[in-house]
Length: 404
Image (cartoon, rainbow, N blue to C red):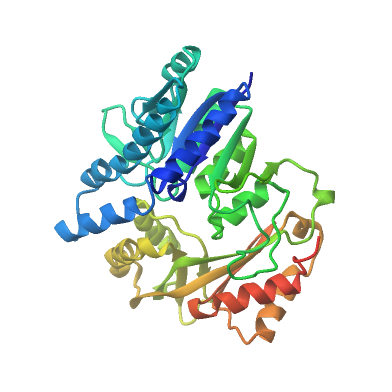
């Protein structure tokens, strides 16, 4: 009898009928002889609704109280799902993140998991129960409730799968797996049968919404067997594997991310330590930075541009402005009218020319590139947000991803 961790997103539990559908999926897995741990997100748009409600009370609500508020969404889901499974005559128990002993660092609204004490879950499984755990949340050593940031339920599921030594972690979502591009933008996009941990991590960090970046990072770090599949149709999904580089295409997929803002500090003094001062201030606000570009210095001055999530734009701007005088910056500019498109593929390591083909395809489509960043298996470009659809379609066609 194996152990399976199953994670269901908010759309999967948005309404009584969908909760019952999830319950049937979970029970079927249990009847197949497996022990089951289920992680669920808040139903539908509840988290967004709670955030809007908080903003009506206060423009800048305390982070601790936001965590107290937002953690309630997942508790609605776990209780309703437990009721649905119990109604079918099965032993089940729901646990909050704290009850499941998911311990996090002392950071509100975007905490990271530091440890999972598996004893409570093991005890419940040993008694024959299906265990349902609230995703997106944990607890500190001081017993303060914390949340893990957008998509945090994915991270909860992967962390539990790693701690419990699960045979597989199944991420159920509203799509059938990982595609070569967003099928809403590219109807010819193909579902991938398998993808490497490295590719999954790069795609997640570049805007593929099927898996949170931190979850992909944990899966890679601890080699958690992972499958992305649909909550609504019973078909095989995409397996995240350690497959050989020789079997990979040059480019595996094209991703896009509209949740991007570009910050530019102009006229920064060209001296040692200036960049350190800027990005230390940004890091102190717990803001993750993606691309960083510094212009060639002229007259002992340079411009430094970087990208962050659009939701972090205000915090990033405030951080840079706080040290602008210290680094001699003339102006701090913010632009949330941008987006990022990326080509990802492990085959890039041994196949030169991918960047050239990407730039050529964008140029042929009349799309200007504002920033560029590369890694061994990814090339990313910042463009205007209004041009994302054309860019993704052009790149998907350029690399012929519609073909097997």
